[in-house]
Image (cartoon, rainbow, N blue to C red; front, side):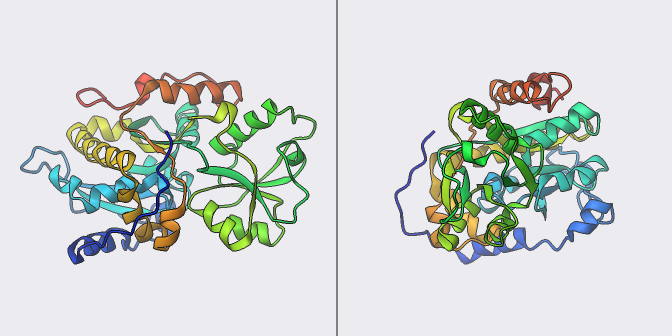
Length: 345
């Protein structure tokens, strides 16, 4: 779905709304503690059923600093969680793969902006019994491209053969869809040499010559183009990658089995915010500066992914098919069983 690109004056948030957002993004949790199991219980301050019948009133969410997670912050700022009787504690992580240990041992309840390849591989390997609460975002035009420095000799997809290309997580949805694009372009003589570099560090790695190209998403894509004059050499949503689902809000079967009403309440709040994001990019622009550290000008300029308005087994099934074909899954997973539906987990 094409995104609106007109530039509008940013809305001024009320002091109360700004305070809510500051409290949301200022949760002081060290990534090391999150990953190693020393960050405290996910249910702290929220155990026991509340007056609204929820099994727990506080949900701990590990969230990536990407546009993928915008609905989480929209729901918080617009009071959608409060409407459902929920409090949300956000624990920032640079990559969703870093939240898997905490999700597995119950330190966090949900991962927002969770890379689908990471979640589906965890299911396939038996690391987690995954449940997808909310289908998050899919590729949209200009939302994820491969860029190089202005003077790079790389001009086409075929030129990437044998080159060092930065990927946020190895063997992820990024490399999966880039391999498919390169195969469609006939570039199969030499494999791409993928290097793992977190999105926020890709521009620096490109500038220092540590990689020759960066497969980069927003908001870091726009930043790299502005600061470095980075040039797009591969349209990241072309051909087989068109409309490919990227990430969502993942949890575990244990969480949904033990907290079905809480899971359903969280799902309703985020899906409500997802529809806001899909209908009007102003809602996304308002929250991005708070949790991505983008300035308002950049938030208004970046391309956004497509925000899913509802859960769709067909969309997830498309990715599962591509992963199975690409050898990233040992067996084909059933998307119907992965998606959480209120009333049955």
